[in-house]
Amino acid sequence: MTNSAQKPSGAEKTSRLTPEQISQLQIARRADGTSDDWVELYLAEFPENERRDVSQLRALLQSGKLVLHETRDKHGKLLVWSMSQDYASRDKVEPSFWLGCWTVTRRNMQSTGLGRIHFAKVLEALKQEKPDYIGRVTEIESTAGQTRDSQPVRRAKFYKALGLKEIDVAYEFPLFQPVNAKEYVAQAQLGKGIPAQLLIASFGNDSLSVSDARSIIKRIYTFGYHLQPTDPYIAERLMLVRETGESVLVDIRTNGSYRSTWPTGRKEGTRETRRLLFLP
Image (cartoon, rainbow, N blue to C red; front, side):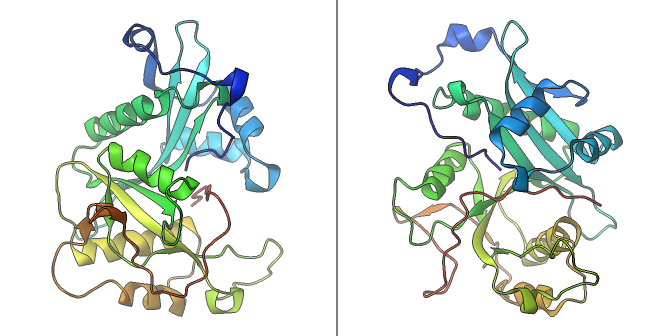
């Protein structure tokens, strides 16, 4: 997920990076997370209620369940970092994929083109590391009912420019379990989820089967959001994945407008972004 810091304006406005400046950067280098500067940027850009314990993040990085890529300037100053989670297949049927967790850009480097350069290199590095994976999956807010200059639409345009495709399913963010819950609370009791979209940067295949789409959603819900596999909510969501037998991978933009897979009348989510830590 991208960070929600406001873009620079006025005197703080930055210009696009030149080819010479780009050539001096250390772009999307794999890091082990032992340095403190990514933590400082993380704490500066995310409110307390949206952070996760740094020691847990570092443990997951050390275990290889999360991977960190950093872009630094010629002096070693951290400018952008991204984390992705490895969803390796547990059998010969379900697909393996990466799931994007965060991309954080230092405020004075936003609107310079650096985020796009960094992200493209991250995709290249992940594909090189796991070429047999289907790609890197990203969750974004629904663009349904949004204006062209809204953050969700601008974010979708950003990913579109990088070649990501929409997984054409009725996706939503489930609600998290209450912090102090003593036992599991079914999603039906928590309320309606938040309309969202699933995108994928494919590592070579321009199609995605219905079964693979269902597998991706189920694993994100159970492993990422900690929903119990028996929660009726999961079966209900998976039933909405169409049974045409066709590919469910489509272009984000269709006929000049951002498509929505949501039925009309759904309440739009108000949160600008979802920043999730997918703990085991």
